[in-house]
Length: 114
Image (cartoon, rainbow, N blue to C red; front, side, top):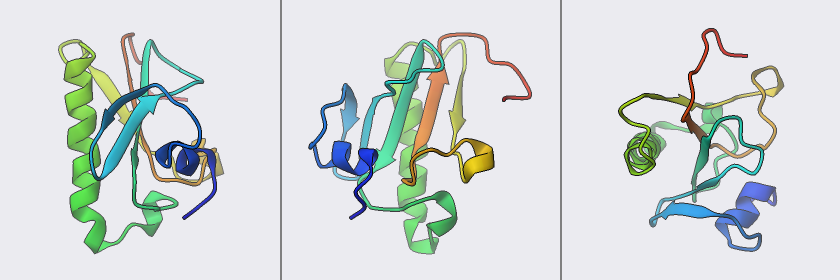
């Protein structure tokens, strides 16, 4: 398994404010929040980035999105709207080489982003 900060959080070697966990994913608050609600949904399976996911990972990828939607309801941002983001590569803003979904909400989002 990778040894980056998200892997350490998944292994519970580093504390995090966990908002959801099941056998496949862990969701926690981003310590560098870009919105009032900024939660990261991370698969427990070690996948470095979306481009390395394969056909066998499709159920897990779908689970990441449905968990994010459930957390949005739990956090009370479903009615007003939220954004889901997966970054891949330096130009997209990827800073940790571990697949994760950003759930952002609680404020007006602009388009285009970034």
